[in-house]
Image (cartoon, rainbow, N blue to C red):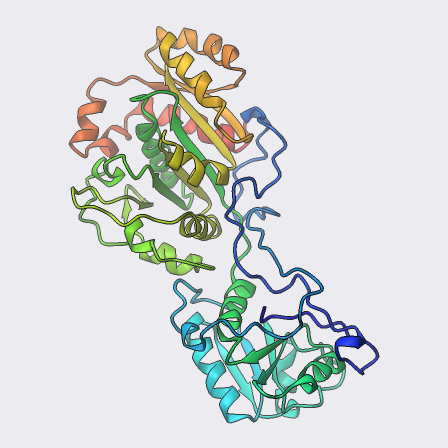
Length: 435
């Protein structure tokens, strides 16, 4: 591992002097199922709310290295990959580099350009004094042996391969948080810069799925996204069903410029939220990420890429609505990353039975039932919800011609109808904790 946490030991340093690897170096996102602790399936009325810029501790947790391992960086990352790391932030805070080493300076300039951070430089600590405390991160070359008086320790001490144990001793003496040896640590440093300056995760991820086939989950997801966007909420609609034919067809947006899921198949590490949001297509006032609505075969997207995209989406949008398919692949890829789930089902006995079976496969996350039906069938909604042990989150109106509208790409037109807006507004208010 290339990022190290240094605990000074009275200035002597060395392996025997308290230098250890800590949890600060983030190796990547935890994409495994069950990575978050879930308190159990609670009612939607317990929602803590859809809040702008809300910080969600633990949502985007990353696993640091195990303590007690060799302090030296693993020489596995290819230094040439640092500049090729996909999807890194473009709007980071300033990074201060203090070094007179030409090689270090060139390497860091290349990495900073790759991750899109603003870099300020100084050849010595005296010249860096005025910039030191205002920089988001301080990178210190191993040629610098003194710090400005009463300044915080450097974030990363940078050295070159071949400097040996003296680099670790210097890191301990200076109180550096981490030590990175170039070129081996180039890929790690790029990742570290991107993660350290990405905004905190804060958006709500809402999953919408059908309790049975043809329940209307995609329709509900589109209308909720449309209403949220109409109220000024930064919203992203995610197509979570690779076998669903492409949600973009419902929006008549198959020609809208922007990325689709296959374009993100090779995404890895930390995706810059700003770069992602700027690259997605939009329709109805909201951004969307869809599977292509074409007959051409698409590249499979690995679970790690899905996790990275959802993490960036949470950081970049206030509300992320995921249209979760009913397949086991979609459930595994998307359901476990949702904060809340809406289960959509028609007011029918067979649909209720199918929904009850599906509930056994859902993660223990806040789940509510949305009944699809007309005014008469809505009377069965509370009974069905009670039988499933779920709160009733809303009644999706049964509007004649909705299925045809979805086929013709006119779903957004139907989303402007009063009955639809009342439904969507009620659900969003519920998410927001309103009575």
